[in-house]
Length: 275
Image (cartoon, rainbow, N blue to C red; front, side):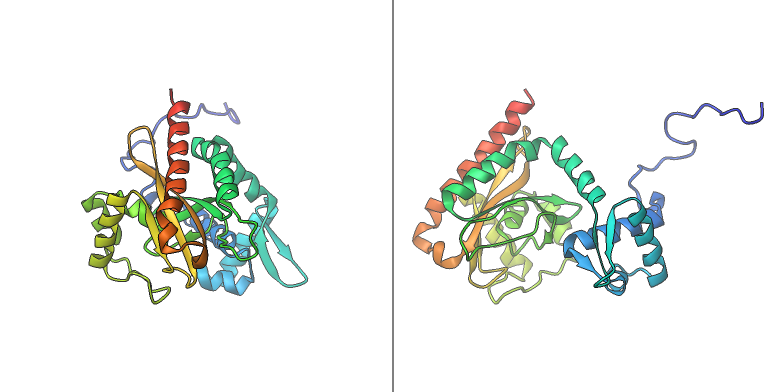
C-alpha cells in the first residue's frame, strides 16, 4: 500500500563483508566534520581559514561543516573576533564517554589524591587510534606547574605516559607502530632514533616506570607508571609532571613509588568492577 512503511532489515546489508570501520565505508562528510571538531578541541579556538588549512578541507566545505555543527550546538562562533570553538553539545558527548568509562570512574579520585599528595600535576592518558590522548589532568596548585589540556594529543616518545604505553607493546606491535612514524625532536633531549628508543623502553620495562627527562619541555620532568586491565594488558599511563628542580635525581625513585602505587590502585579498582 502506498505510503506504508516497510519493516527495516536487521543485520549487515547484503553483500557487505567488510567491518564497519574499514576506510571504504567511511562517510566523507562525517569524517571531515569530525576532523574539524577534533581540531577545535585540540586548539580551543580558530578562524575559518585556520581550520580549513589545518584539516586540509576547502574553505567552502569547512564553512558548511561549521554551519551544520553550529546548528547542533557542537561548535560556537564568536562574531567579535571571528573564531570558532567547541560548543556545549560536544561537551555533553564527551561527558557521556566519561560517565560510561570504568577507567575514568576508577581513576578520577586516585588522580585527585595523587596530585594532592605530591603537589604536582597528575595525568592519565591512553592510546587512541595511534595517538596519545590525555583523559584526566588534575593540575598542581603550585604557580609553576605542568599543564596539558584534557583531550589533547601528544607524542609518545617524549612523554612519560607515552613511553609507558610503548614499553608494554610486543615487538611486532611496536615495529608496526613506529613504521613510517617520525620521532620529532621537541628538545635537545628528545629521543629521535628508533634503536635508542627501543633501548629506553627495555629499561622502562625493567624499572616498572618511565621518565620524561626534559624531552618534551626543557625544565620539566614527568614520571609515569602503567595501568593494567583484567587480562594484564596495559590500557593507560598515570603520571605526575612538574619543574625539574622538584624532580631531582636522588628523589626519582621515591616519586616513582607514589606514581606506581596510584597506578596499581586504579588497576585494582578496575578488577573489582568486573567481578
